[in-house]
Length: 511
Image (cartoon, rainbow, N blue to C red; front, side, top):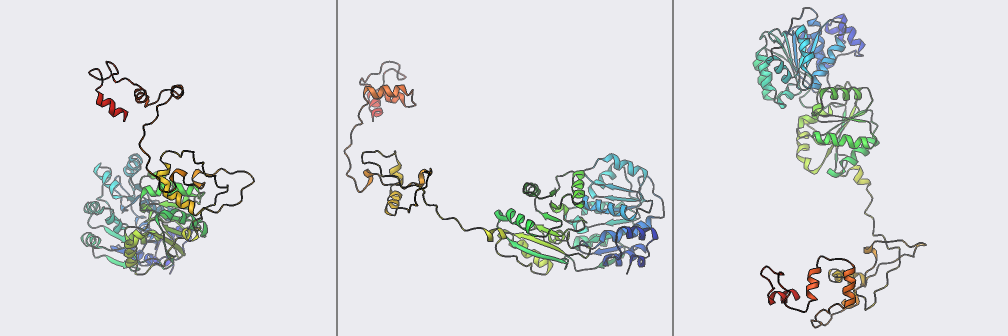
């Protein structure tokens, strides 16, 4: 079947041919005729199957006749994210280039000025995210009573992001005789309840089992430790034949840090996450589409709705917390009948999430190995390097060891002395080695049990030693040393608070 068999206009068929498409996808073949007949539709299909074109193409032909009025759009498309809304707008520009239709895009992160001007003139197609649409409605800039076609795109994503109450408010303000098109990858109970309330005998079109993965995507799971993630990713990025790749992370902070890390290692990489302003995000996507960069690190904000041709690889740097997100992430590759590769990193803490994903997709993800490629190639720990200088001669008996060293290291030193290390031949030039590398010998005064020496008073320094100490300058304990050198008991008035110091304090100080 060709697009001409779907009874589309000649102008529309010409635009489709200019885009390089010749045959419709299954969802397009089944949905387009019913949309042209004015029926409500529930389209259930996985991502990457051409859902956007399945409602954009017939809407262009339907809206070709008629005229828009100020602040009253003729059709409305609601999308959960700015990326999805922008994608729908791009489709209208691409396929409607031979029609004289007007369009406005209401998304967050963009000023109200241009949006207000477009709404004041009147548009045939209004594409919006729920939050910005409600803002404009409450400001009185848009009226929804003239909407004849309502499209709810990625309804299950709306549910995940908490937009269902806003969607219900929007539906209640639109003409109840409108045509409603609802598209979703899954049909959880809240979405079914929404359809039952606001749709009239919808035609259900399901082209594949909900939440199944594309058979043209080769999936694999790499078991890796958290510390080895970055090294493993860089090794895979260099080892794979990558045309373009998207790397998904669970947190915005991880997106920023990973993108900077890859950039420092020479990769052509960009990033996209929720903290970026809309113009900056769109500029990054344009660079990715134009091959200025071939890798994109993204959060789940980009998992759905990114329709980028030629993505050869998807890396789940973090295992997604929700099983449905896994399906949408890897759906960025293997699109339009092409093959793709999806590699997921999983740590021990991700075992439960992996089990939920495998339960949802109905298959076990092949393991790439219990160890990451970096861990498998890691060399064994290096053995101890022998000293390159001869052992230091034992100190003479009368040499005094450093204070406390014999007490702390006596037992270990004895062991080292019993099994001395092998020493290589001395090098041509002496090589300085750290102190701990030199073999230690037990000081003579610590060898064997020593009889306890009688307690003796420390000799008082002679005049020469006292003079040397004074030449070295004042010390923190100088007052105590000066006091111990005194022979008199009475230090004179003013030393203590009440005059002379009692004799018992002087005795304590001497001890």
